Length: 187
Image (cartoon, rainbow, N blue to C red):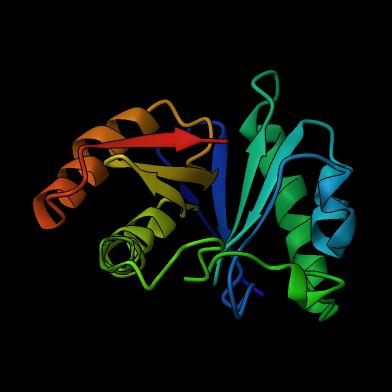
């Protein structure tokens, strides 16, 4: 098995591409070992000293490391864990119902035409671009002209995430949806 790796705009996160589907539906984001307990792969990755976050996209796994760790040391260890996991055909999650994302923006009132248009733009134009960088973006709400988005995977904590939100996403949404005034990141 050959696993490709790609850098992301976040220097603390690498994207690992195993050449197989990681999440057939949605995404999964683990920011601690406790959250990773519901995933055999995340649990193994969090056992490595310095792993601080694990994110599963459709066909990739993003791993975020502690600033004190060096990729030259950590990357081969992660590759070994990912290779072993996929070679054994273990599931990514113990319960597939706990995946999030994949266009299912919880709490989004899709009967509202403005929210529906925002969600469609996110799903069709923005999320695929963000996934290429090892992350995801979830719609969290729209109120008084402000779109709230949750950054996940490589995007969470990325130094360029503010620029991506303001110069990229906000400009696009404001162009296509006149009701949008601002975009904000939420936890």
